[in-house]
Structure formats: C-alpha cells, structure tokens
Amino acid sequence: MLTLEPVYLLIGAFLLFAAALDLRSRRRAMSAFWAILSLPFLAGEAILAAARHGTHWPAQAMGIGVIALGVMAAVGDRRPSGDEAALANTREAEAIRLGNRLFGPALLIPLVTLLVALATQYGPAPLRALVDTKQSTLIALGIASVVALAVALRVTGARIDSGLHEGHRLLDTLGWAALLPMLLATLGSVFAATGVGDAIAALVAVVIPIDSRIACLLAFAFGIVLFTAIMGNAFAAFPVLMAGIGLPLLVQRHGAHPAVLGSIGMLTGYCGTLLTPMAANFNIVPVVLLELPDQYAVIRAQLPTALVLFVVNVALLWLLAF
Amino acid sequence: MNYWPLLGVAVVVLGFALRRNPALVVVVAGVVSGIAAGKPPGELLELLGTAFVNNRNLLLFVLTLPVIGLLERHGLRERARGWIAGFRSLTLARLLVAYLGLRQLLSMLGLYDLAGHAQTVRPLLAPMSEAAAAQDEPLDEPTRDRVRALAAATDNIGRFFGEDVFLAFAGVLLIQGFYAGHGIALEPLAIGLWALPTAIAAFVIHAMRIAWFQRRLRRVAERRRDADA
Image (cartoon, rainbow over all chains, first blue to last red; front, side, top):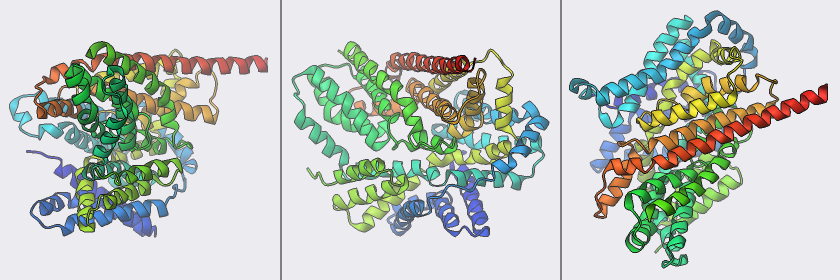
C-alpha cells in the first residue's frame, strides 16, 4: 500500500539538494537550515519508531534541531536578492513563445490531484487498496507534483536541473516562512502536553455566570475564537472549550443540540483562524509568496469577513442549538 | 492547577505584537511553557522532536515549488495576466466570486488540498486578479498589494467554510470523536449538514465584500478621470 513515506523522501531529497546549492554559493547558514529541515523527512519514520521503542536520543536530537532552526531563522532573517527584474524580459518573451501551453502543467496539479484522490477514495476496490485512504489527497498531491513537473519540462523544453533550481529559488524566497506551519503545530502539541488548555478553561469557568444561557454561549464563542487565535488552529481549541464550557454548561445544563453546537462551534473557531498570524500557512506564507510589504496584509483582508461571520455564527448557534 | 505554562502564551502574544521573527517566537514559547510546566530537559526535547516530525505533512506544498518555479521562469504569471486582460467583461468581482464558490464546493467534496497559496494563488489567481482589477485603470502599488491580499483571503475563506461539510474531514471526525468519548453518539452526516448554514453565510458575506471592493476601485478610477478631464 502506498503511504506518504515515498513522498516524504522526495521532499527530503529536494531539501538536501537546496542545501547543497546554498553550500556551493557559500551561503552556509541557509544551507544548514535546509539540511536540518530535511531530517524529519529522511529519518522521520526512524525517529518515531525509535521513540516508540524507548530509544529517546534521536527524538531529542531532533528537538535540538527544532530549537536551532528557530534561532537560525531569526539570525539569518534575510530577503533574497532579486534577479527577478533582470529576467523580466526573458519571462515576457517566453510568455509570448509558449502562450496558453503554460497553463497546462499548472492546472495539472489540481487536476491530477482530483483524479487520483477520487479514484483511490471512490474507485474500484483494487484502486482503493493501492493507497492509504486517510492520506489519499496528500498522496495524490505528491503524485500530481511529479507528473506536472514532467509535463512542464516537456512544454518549456527545460532540463530537470533547471526545474530544481527554480524550486530552490522559490524555497529561498520563502525562507523561514516555509518552516513556520510545522513549528506552530509543534507548539500546539507542547501547549497540550503542558496543560495550557486546562489552565485557560479553569480561568474561564471562574468568571462566567453559569446560570445564564447567553453568557455561557458568548463565553464559548469568544473563548473558541481567542483560543484558536492563540493556538493558530481551531482543532486545538475545540476540545478545550468543549470540555470546559460546551459539554458541561451548554449541552448538559442548558440543553444545547450537540451536533449544532459541535459543527457551528468549530466554524466559529475558524473565524479566529482568519485573524491570527499563528495560522502561518494560511496567513503569513501567502504574504511572503505574494511579496506583500505588510506582514498582516492577508489578515487585514480577512478581518471584516471574519467579524461579520462571527456574529452570524453566534446568532445561528442561538437560533438552532436551543 | 498550574498556571505557569500560560507564560508560553504570553511569549506568543508579546512576540507577535513586537513583530519579532515568528519562528523564533514560537520556539521560545514552546521552551518557556515546557520549563514552566516543570518538564525535564530531555523530555521537553523529545516532545519537541516527535511533535515536529509528526507534523511534517504541513510542508508537502514544497513539492509543487519546482513546477511552479519553472513555469514562472517561463512567464506563467505574465501569461496569466495577459490572458485575463483579453476578456474585457471579466471583472475582479466575477473572477474572485467564481473562485470562492468553486473552492467551497471542492472543499465540501474533501478536495481542500487541490488549491492553495503555492499551487494556485501565487502563479494564477493573484496575477489574474491584478489583470482583472486593472481593466479600467492601471493599479498603483498599494492597491495592487490589496488586490493580491484579497485573492489570498478569498482562497482561505473558500477552503475553511467548505471543508467542514465534508464527512470524512478531520474536523468532523474530531467533533464526533469528542462526543463519542463523552457518551454521545452522533452521525458524521448530522455534523456535516449543520456546517451548511455557515458555509452559505460565508459565501454571501465575502462575495458582497469583493463586490464592494471593486466598486470602490471603480469610484477611485472615475474620480481620477474626472480630475484629469
């Protein structure tokens, strides 16, 4: 059965390649950065297996690596030198030469992802047995990236190393922003393991008047938005707020409908995701990718939608859950 | 109850408020909250290491970078701009609202990783939005940046408020799992269906904001033309 493991190895190999290129152009800090980041992809399964069997040092070494990455991100905080403008003429000429054929490989990424994901989720049994269905969209994305690269090389007439060089250029543009989603998810695990959620839930329970249905609902709604903003992830906030307020107060004391509360409650948390730099892969990575000068430009663009939608969600909870 | 781990949250809030490097802020917050909870160093390092490895699927988008980089080098963004500029009737609002609706529908089918900031927004949607917005009047730089940010925001909103309708989505399973753990049995279908009202509200609200954004762009362009005339 196909798992994500070969896809991870491919990512690890690409990161090592990027490290080698940076080393060759004497950017040692950047090179070390990508080399460390390749470890969870090349050796991730081995690290996890060792930890399960009681050998702690590989995971601890990875932990040191995580801290090193954080420090290097801050010290080597540099924007890439742009040869972008110099190449503008080539790009214009190529755009005219290749025309709409350029769209083909770009659209192949979503298209192949769609086909592979659908075929392995809903297709005939032998196809479904081929991949791990829990990760089929992600595996499909991995396959689609490789297929699209092959077609892109044909269309442009470029060689494979040119593709890898361009990929490396984009990777260097992203820099530490590429790493941030993984670091934030790690922080979420640390917060969970150190009882940050329980502490917040305990604080909230002290301040709300539990006999008032609307007070409990508002505490739940504001709580899940606030907690999502802190953790950068509604999934991390949901169990905390449900255990602290949702289940004991709203469902058991005031008789809220569990499915309505769960579903719309989670989506209320999503309003918080739209507002926080902690949700880096959605709110910070695009700022870097789109070369926007304001770090919070995407959050600003989302703010009005998030606020209005928050009010709508609270109203929906009030109307539908009771 | 040990309240000291909350220091980690304080580090996050303070770090982001002071606009320190986010990667460093996050690592420091993790270490602070671990120490405050009284975790021995070895255990804390192992926790950091295993959590980091467990979340490596978040870097999957890196695999799309070689294709996107190659196509960009050969003028993909220039072509995307030129193509949209050829459709005089395609406005920014029509483009973004269509993308929003499509993104929500695909997410509802569980295909939320189909599009994204690296795969679709940077190479296609952002340059197309710029070209559509510049149909009447060339954009100055701040306006261009706001159009780009709006394109990224539209992608996020389309994804977020579609995915929770999908029955096998991790969020739906998390809700079901939480209740099951507390003795309340729920069907994923019931949970997914209750996500629909919010999905529709999100579409309406954001589509209206896109339309307003375009109207403001037009009004500024007209005022400038009047001033010139």
